[in-house]
Every structure is written in C-alpha cells, then in structure tokens.
Length: 292
Image 1 (cartoon, rainbow, N blue to C red):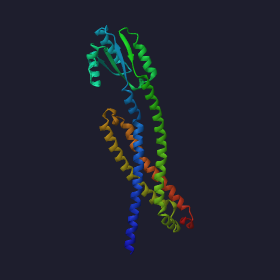
Image 2 (tube, rainbow, N blue to C red; image 1 turned 60 degrees about the vertical axis):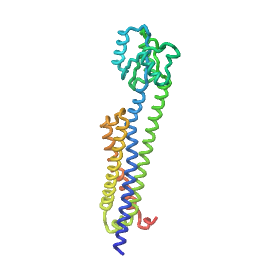
Image 3 (cartoon, one colour; image 1 turned 90 degrees about the vertical axis):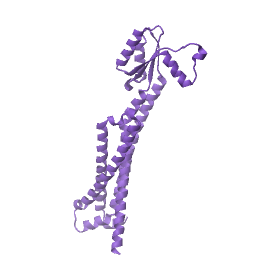
Image 4 (spheres, one colour; image 1 turned 30 degrees about the horizontal axis):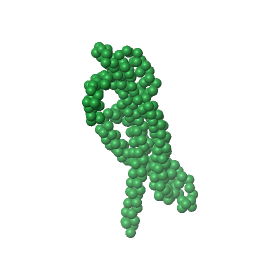
C-alpha cells in the first residue's frame, strides 16, 4: 500500500513539475516572439517604406548625356537606395504585361515618357523629405514631371507610428501577464507542499534552510522552461529568415543575442522571486491557517 501511495505521490509531483515547465516555456516563448517583433519592427517598416518609388519623367528632348548624369547623381545621392532608368519602350511593355492589351494598337504611337524610378532610403520616405527632393530636382529643364504617391506615404507613416505604439503597449502588458502566470504556477507548486514547509519549521529548521531547496528546484524548472522557449524562438526566427530573405532578420545579432539572454535570465529571475515570496508567505502562516 505504501509503495502504491509513494508511486502516486511521485507521479503527482512529476506532473506538477511538467505543468510548471510547460507554463514557463509557453509564456517565455510568446514573450520572446513579441520581443523579436519589437526588435525587427523598424526593419519591417523600413522594408515597406523602401518600396515607395519616386518617378522622374523626362522630356523627349532630353540629351543622353544629361540623362546619364542625372541617373549617376541619383544613384550617388544620400537619399537614394537605387535608381533605375526605364525607357518608354520598356514602360510600354510593362503596361502591356499588366493590362494584357497593347494600347499602342489603339493610340497608334507610344505616348509614354522615358523615366527614372528612384527607390528611396526609409529615413527619407516622409512628405517633407520627398517634397524637398522633388523641389531640388524640378529646376532641371529636361525633367517634365516628378511623381510619387504622397497619400500612401502619409498613410504608411501614420500606421507605422500607431503600430509601434501598440506594440510597446502590448509588450508591457504581456510582460506583466507573463510574470503573473509564472508566479501563479510556482505558487500552486509551493502550495501543494505547505505542510512539509511547516513541518520542517516546527522541527527547528531555519527559514533560509527550508527555502533553499524550493528555490533551487524552481530555478531548475525555470531554466528548463527557458531553454525550451529559446529553442522555439530559434526555430521561429530561422523559419522567418528563410521565408522573408529580403528582411535579413539575422543581421541584428547583438540585439537577438541580448533578447535570448534576457529571456533566459527572466525565466530564472521570475521563478526565483516567485518561489521566494511563496515560501516566505507559508513560513509566516500559523499552522491552523494552512487549511484555508
């Protein structure tokens, strides 16, 4: 009978440990994924900003040397990521591919203009910067028109600000929830051993002596949970990196390493602090209060 009871208690203890580890791992994993989002949010926003194109339309009378000089200056400009010359013939082919019809069959000639598509660096994709760049280029007499989607730029910048604010708010809330959830799991684990704690105290064991094995056990569970969470984060990061190659998510190695270390230490810190507080609470309770 005693053997069966011991086995039952052992299974119950192992089940309790597994549930604590799973809780810690899931919470830290979600918190880590949110941290990855925060770290790479600017890079993702910059990626979309750099898809905005400023198109410079050229007069038919523009000389080749003028066009080449302009293209070269645009490529070397601080605000330019790249500049691509598009002839009117190439533009016609692109339009034909998009619409599926050859509009020149109806018009009888090619009304399009030679142009240069300028892909701007993310820091310059604002209404003010684009206006300044446009004004600086418009004084050239062989440039007919400069176009860019100003409404899209304003909408994109507004959305980036809103999303960044909400990501920070959600990160703060989720960190608080993570601490509370892990604390709750640890407290339940310690609660199941409250009578053992009080028995040890009654036979003369010091609070520090009683607390030490509980804290060390919880820290070990925190380490295991944190390692599982880090493995999950590494898998997610690797998958996103090979799926969205253009974002180059693994470039921020220092920040990513800091996040991984932070998640690992957070798992240890929360479990240590939660166990310390929980054991201290039961150590300060009277014997008759353990039943409530």
